[in-house]
Structures are given as structure tokens and as C-alpha cells.
Amino acid sequence: MTDNHPPRAEIVIDLGAIRHNLGLLAARAAASGAETMAVVKADGYGHGAVPAARAAMSGGATWLGACSLGEALALREAGIDARLFSWLDTPDVDFAPGIAHDVDLSVSSLTELERVADAAGRAGKPARVHLKIDTGLARNGCPAYAWPDLVKRAAAEPGVDVVAVWSHLACADEPGHPSVDRQAERFADAYALARDAGLEPLRHLANSAATLTRPDLHFDLVRPGIAMYGLNPVPQPEPLRPAMTLRSSVVLTKRIEAGESVSYGHTWTAERDTTLALVPAGYADGVPRTLSGRMSVWLDGARRPIAGRVCMDQLVVDCGDHEPELGAEVVLFGSGERGEPTATEWADVIGTIDYEIVTGMYRPRVRRRYVGEDGR
Image (cartoon, rainbow, N blue to C red; front, side, top):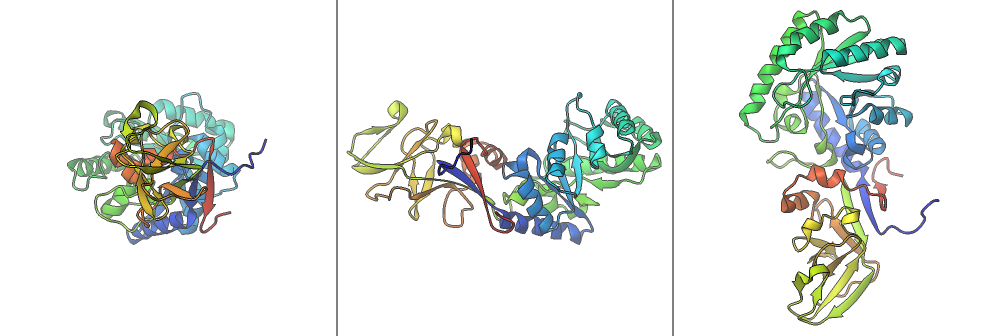
């Protein structure tokens, strides 16, 4: 059944902002002679993988990155024919469909290499492989002691075409952190061993933060993720435009007297007579309950504080002597250009990162709407 009712809350995605951000990042990469892979994993960090991918490609991306093979194949099913890379799946995933649809695959172990080679045989074509070296993040990736065997076996495997060597940085969002140079050194050593094994692979290491701050680590390809959505991963200002806005509306107003309390637990009590506005968005719609008493919204040209606890389906705004119209727009977070809260501000208040805020915003009853270039 199609839901034709107006949304209780919606996230508005500015595809023009994504295109702008990717263009900026791609220009930084191009200045170093590198191409750009736009990372659209986790449904495009909550922005929608397919629309985000198309906006990124129009901004200059020549590669797309997806965490899982399923995410990559969904892009292919949508008609996207860019170079595609996926890097993390469970041991029971069959790589053959990915190989058949020209998805590059990451390999971190001999066992994984064997699975990919077997899938290539069944797909009837060589697998394009990116060998991942663990340079210090200690998550996925081949440890240094196993790397020589992996590159030798990969170089000798007839069903595998080694396209690249890659790794991922742990602390690039802290410019000057000593681990960045240490990881770069280990990456150089791993690349040299791959060359010694007869391989001629591309290199990619730089995430969003390193794309912005370490041109010496751009190599052949950079992999911006969070920055293409307009959220800045580094301390210095960057001309990025946040692409996501979370908005709702006023559904009820009422006047209460000083001394009256609001919402569960009566954690907030009015110090004066005031007007309350009810907004039909709560923690089931992505508004963290931990923001209770610690957040404001943008309503009728001003920030107005939340009164009491954020509930599952609703929250209450203290409007003082102002009475908003029913249906008035309430911006919970946005770009910040008008003075409204941002996803980064939410994250700072509750002690997390803005990645978590935006990736958690696509909920079943929160509609997603696109504006800007390529929007429909």
C-alpha cells in the first residue's frame, strides 16, 4: 500500500551540495594526479546510495565504493556503470555475481583469495582484486607477517587480476597524529613487496580527512566518504555544504502557566507562562533521547529550546510568547546557514560523531526527499 499522507518528519537531501562537495574533493585529488572514489556505503551515509552516487559522478567521481557486495550490486541494478569497489562481506557470500557484474573486490587473506579465485572460475572471467594491507588500524586487512605470501599467491593466481593495494587510516582526522606517517611507511613497504612479486597495482589510502590534509598520500585514488555529504572530518574550516536537513512541523500549540511541567518524568518546569508547540518527531524518527533538555530547533526564524524529554513519537518546543502557526516548519538540524542546529552539533552534544547521526536518519516513517541538481 502506498502512503500518500504528508510526512510527520522528513529528511531533505540537497544533491547539489553533494555534487559541490565531491567536486571540491575531486579537484584536490586531481591536483595530485589522483582519481576519486565516492564512498556510498550504508545507503550513502543515510542520504540514499543511488542518488548520492549519481550526484557524485556528476561532480567528478570516477569510482564508487560500497562496503558490501550487496550494496555494490544494488548500484549496478540501478544502471550505474562506474568502476565499483566493495570490501567487506561474510564468509558465506558468493563473489561470482560481483565478478560477473564487474565489481572490484578486496582481499585480505589467502582464504579470501581462494574464495575469489573459485568464484572467478564460476563466473567465467578474472576477478579484479584490491589487496588490503593492515598498516595499523587492526581491523580488516592482511597483517604484515602474512603479506609476502598473499602477494606472491595473488600474483600467481590465473583467475585474479590484482588492480590495487590499499589500506585505511586510523587517525587522519587528527592532523599531525604520528600514526598517519607510521601507517604511510608501512603502506610503502607493503607496496614495495607487491612490486617485488611482479605486480603493478594502483595505490589508495586517503579517506576524507587525508584527501583534505595529506596530498602526499593521495597516490592514484582517494576515497572520500563523510566529506562528500558536507560534514567536515578535520579541525580546520573547509568549504563543504551539509546535504541533509531533518524537518517536521507544528501540530498543536497550547499555553501553560508557570510551574507546570512537561513530558515524561517532569524533568522540565516552566519558569513563566509560556506557549508550547508539539512536533511529531521523536527517537523512533532518529531524534536521540539523550538530546532531551540539551537541544533546540529552528522555528519561525529563531532557535527555540526543547521542553522536557524527547519521546518516541514527539517532542515539545518552548516558544515563550510566540505562537507559531499550525503546520509551521520545524528544522531539527540542517546546514547551519540560517542559524539552525547541525548534525555535527547534535553529535558534539551527545558525545558521538556526525557520521552516526546522518547514517541513522533513514527510518521507515521518515520520508526522504531530494532537491537541487539531479533531484526529482
